[in-house]
Figure 1 (cartoon, rainbow, N blue to C red):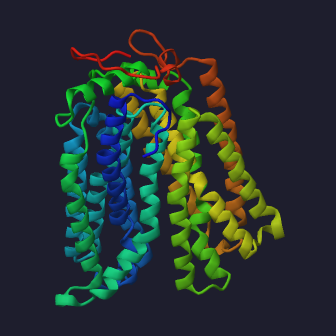
Figure 2: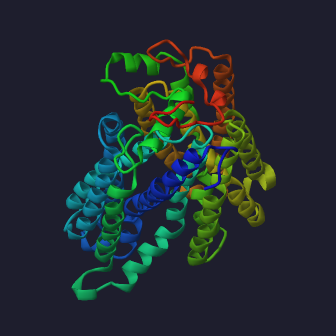
Length: 474
């Protein structure tokens, strides 16, 4: 991983190398299988599941509920899961979640009716809920402000890779093994993808760290360096019990609400990408070719989103990267709306989806910003991450269904205009957030009354030096 700043000490280089070789790759692969097990339901439906489970007569309602039950438990369990993670060992909790959801995904092959499918999907949502917010919290417990955005965007790129290849993997399994040993292809798909997740889970118990103060496999000098550099930028390294003070800390400043709105709007930015296939098919493209066209778009996003994170770390900035990214996204949606009366020509549609792909990095940068704003208290930070992710994904998932209507393809006038308005709101929110932070207006404070900017990473010493007799000094 490329360093986000120059002149680190040898101890810091070794520490980051350990994290980048152990924590980050497993996080990316874990997020990949997270999406693989979550998003394979349409592939199962297309390869005989609806008929086998007698969901044909009323398939629209029963199939939609299979998706909805997952979403209900997934959103509801994120907050309690992230309230637990500061008090347990992430090296056990996060791989255990992967192990459990892989097992559930595999057992979905045994369902015999839609009620069984609903129950399995609900359980899958519970198991998957802790992974994303928990991993964001863990990354923020190890990486400094000069390093975090790059790692969070690399982590988020795992979802892009999953979107690029999950359909190909699921479809290939379901079609090639259909009828093998008397088992339907869609059941084989659940079995094999569940096994993949279980296999991925096992090395996580040995690879990923806990926290700087209690990671057993890490040398003491590296743990000292990790503690000192996090303390130097204001991160709390001690843990206290939850209380109403944490709730007051979170809701007593405008930052939580601004970040929440910004993160929520960011989920609308890739709407044109998500509807790219249907737009092409309505423009008389072959459906198989239209589906294939999404793969390079998602792979392009996986390659370019981390570049936005690298730049954000390199220049130690969150505000202008989110602001400029939102302005560029607005330009793309304006072009999609005004040119040819929103009847977008093919060449512009392709340019737009590739132009919007890197801008999906705004969302993880806002989540990084959220991680840093609450670094003065671990419990508040964990709660803020979970609430922003849960609520921030709630509205877009319901709203997009009403805004980007399949019947509006390929024009999508309502979707484009609505998204334009939301991006304008994002620009306003990000501007207010950036200005308030720079004014240090009512910033979150630690137990001693120091706000986050009084111990900012912008003042982090260039070197963290380990002294000979244990400990470390900044």
